[in-house]
Image (tube, rainbow, N blue to C red; front, side, top):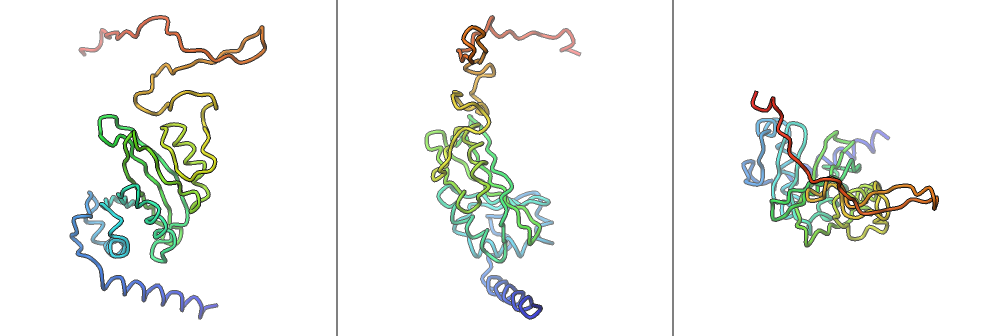
Length: 225
């Protein structure tokens, strides 16, 4: 058993040396972020190896204190995740979360972030990319990470971002008859429909929201203090 472990470590070390020989410059323009000093001391080798093996799939790498964010485009997401999961240098075998952000003031209003975790190296990697409202379709990664299926359903439910290839893309947090996507910034605070119980018919009734009065902005007497 020890011989097998030593052989595996030697193989990984040889792969490390082979990729290091082809590494890009440390001051590559792809790398940015406030954690530059930390990058030089602890993460330079990993970033260089990542750029050497998957540089064509990466737009930018942003390094924070304990997290690396890899910015890419939608068409490269699947290839990049495949490399990160199966490469012996990363082994991101666990998906932690899929989150989204909405900024209607940007041309690409949606940002999708896939959070991956490497148990072997105790590190977290965020894969992010942006997309617009017209082409708000993202490739499903459920075939790579089975836990992604429900995470994709949640993002679809809240933001309306479709995941191509997800075979069970149903609403998860809202009712099946719910209209709209509540975490979009242009979704009304009052909602579009309201649900009540009809005692006469013994059933739930869904009706359009009726606001009793228009929204009023009240100025507090303590506002100027």
